[in-house]
Image 1: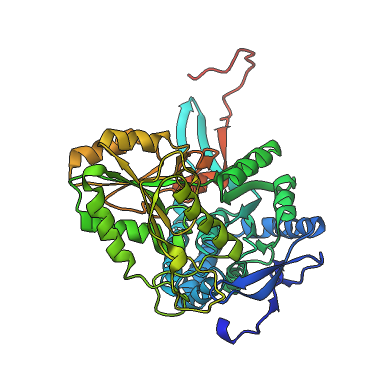
Image 2: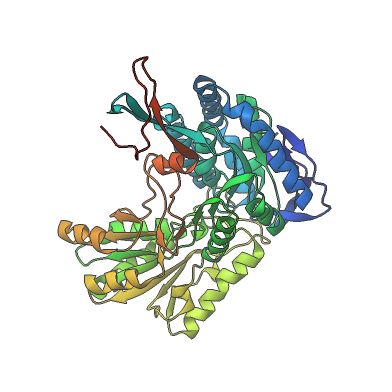
Length: 504
């Protein structure tokens, strides 16, 4: 059954113990189809008792899953990869129906998540320990890596499949069991992946989906049997997640918000830069933590670049993601209205609204949560349009006099997630990568999301904790290391020595 065949309104269950479990709290939240502006599902909001039951199920599954051989764990993950790859179109439909992103963008999200699944399949190598023989006479030292236990994942609405896949394949590969709390705005992808993991052979309880709001989040942050928390979301919530989980003795990776800049120098290929600014500014309706929202342009080429961007915006089609459109709606009506309010704020602050997305004529239902691509020039850095993470299709242009002024502007931002430079000057590019205080950098690449065998994460207010997502950082985060010092005595050795042990 495709999503379009489904009943108009359904009640989603949690996924606990390897099966759907109906919510028992009596509290629910609506799930919308953003392109239709219509409620299609109700998602349960977990009670404290349901949080406890979910964690207990994951805890009971831990010795079963962690006790399986490397070969058996590898087989389950490989089977999940094959099932996901074969049925990714089905998942893309679910993403589009609840988030609103166009089907091609949903397919791209799944492809990037699959990269991490495939990387996780290398875990037999990445979880190896080390061995040093005869560090002292007759003494060997070696290390082993062991899973943490139950780990919690709290994921955002903008990537309902990819962001959970940044974490759970690696956590499972390392032998942990997982409790995932997806966004209540688009929760169905989590249930779909849980069912697929069960089909792949994962033991019951090893992957749990707990739907909910702040009650569920706080329950995971405080529960003594949850050993770590992985989070992606806004900076204020990331700061809260980090401080609360850390105060409860948990290991934390909390990825926060962003205000990503793209610096365009006078020698840049302006056609390439215009394409990149439109792609990175308006893809997924700007609801990406790696979206370019601040276009920093050396004034000498600003007018020419803006003209090119305006031409490209005129060709974009905003509408239902299941149609042949370039950009879909925003996720909720409230979020659409909040993003739209920044256009008025920009005008009040003296900026020039070049393209107003509120005037868009969408290819879709009139009740959808529409806001078209918006281009605003001469945005002052004092404006909320520049300071805030808008998380929508609003591209701000900030004019600077030089490369040095552009870098100073980027480094003054409290965020340090992603940034890019467009130039044909290798020396300028090299200086840029050394001088900007940002965690992920693109050189003539507008969305510098690292491939799965590197790690994702920013600096400053874009990351709390020192553990980035996926890559080798992921395996270190989801495992504990033991160092073992071993001596096997031969029959001739013995005697007392009360001195401090020394290497000899």
